[in-house]
Amino acid sequence: MTEPFPVGIDGLAFAGPAAYVDLADLAQARGVDPAKFTRGLGQHRMAIASPCEDTVTMAVEAGAQVLQAFDIDPAEIGTLIVGTETGVDHSKPVAVYVHDLLGLNERCRTFETKHACYGAMAGLTSSMDWIASGRARGRKALVIASDIANYGLGTPGEPTQGAGAVAMLVDRQPRLLEIQPASIGDYTRQVMDFWRPLYSKYALADGQYSIQCYLDALAAAREDAVGSRQDLLGELQACLYHVPFVRMAFKAHQRELEMEMGQAISKDEPEQWHQLQDSYAKRCAPWLTLNAEIGNIYTGSLFLSLIDLLRKAGSKLAGQQVSLFSYGSGCGATYCLGKITECAGEWEARLDPSAQLAARRRLSIDEYEYMVRAGEHADRLESLNPDDYGLSGGLYYTGTRDDRRHYESV
Ligand code: HMG
Image 1 (cartoon, helix red, strand yellow):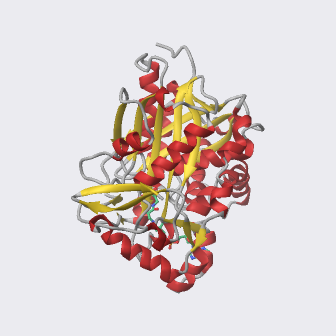
Image 2 (tube, rainbow, N blue to C red):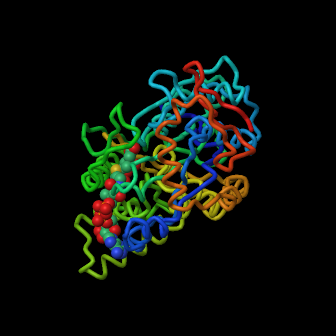
């Protein structure tokens, strides 16, 4: 049956930690050429969560912002999904803390999704199905991606860390992006490219293999979505990808162009190489600045790139078609097409997290390492003081007493 009305993303907001590490500082501390991080990976800064900022606090902040910025009464939310791979309990979902702290209606379906970085895309497509099935009865869904990427000090993954949450309202007649259900293509394959065992705070990755798995998943999900089309890119004004590090989007775009050209693209072929660079400069690079400033936020990374696009070009690209690719290690992926709405430009300023990012504090490497080590024990500490991490004016995790996590607005 054809969907009688458009469904998609009706509102977006980002919230992240109050501090960051500059990758030039990290490169110096690790004895690495800074160009490896800035040009080789395309990253400039990474957001670092203190022990008082966790998946719950960031999700609540992003959720509160999206409700306020897009004028939504919490009572209108009938589904809340939090996509995360860095939850705070083996059993209790982050989503139920968020439901309480946002003051949502008790008549609300609430759950957490986990599939590495794919959890929020799973939440987005499920909530679209919930609306299309008629179950929503006029209510909206709130889907929040919230994560802290931790690979550990001195590891190859260290410069690709980050933290943050993206909240999305999902509704019929959306104000930002319509997603075409018939264009959604999926892919799943069991691979050990990236995982986090129950006993570890830190993710483990087979780095180069994970890049191959990502690219294979992109090719397969795209084919499931649009078949073997060789003329799609010409219709797209933007190609948005899951962004574990910015340079990965270049590799992804190269794979898509290679699929359309039916051959590999090499630097030794200047004409093809220029074609790739031009296409990347037009369709991808302009929307990767937030990712370069914040780092990998796992489930939210793709949607951070969407925020970047809409804050910069919501009006210019009104009515235009874009593609979205979500990849979660392990692995699962979705490729789909969306159309920027005619009114998206009206929301450019409300989406923009620039002021929040400008207020962040730059950590020295000593402070960063202290914070990482303190985070290892934070789940067991009875009392944490946000002031010790220079935090005020928000909701924070303040310790676990009587085996219960406590959150307080300071
Ligand atoms: P590495 O192996 O240390 O780095 O770690 P490298 O040697 O591959 O170098 C990186 C790039 O820098 C290369 O560029 C080098 O040439 C270049 P490329 O050849 O790939 O285009 N380079 C330089 N450029 C300029 N000046 C220099 C210089 N030196 C080198 N001096 C790796 C890289 C990404 C593997 C590592 O950071 C890692 O393991 N990261 C974590 C895993 C990851 O991000 N995988 C991505 C795909 S999987 C995914 O996206 C899912 C994920 O988000 C998790 C989830 O789903 O939950 C991770």
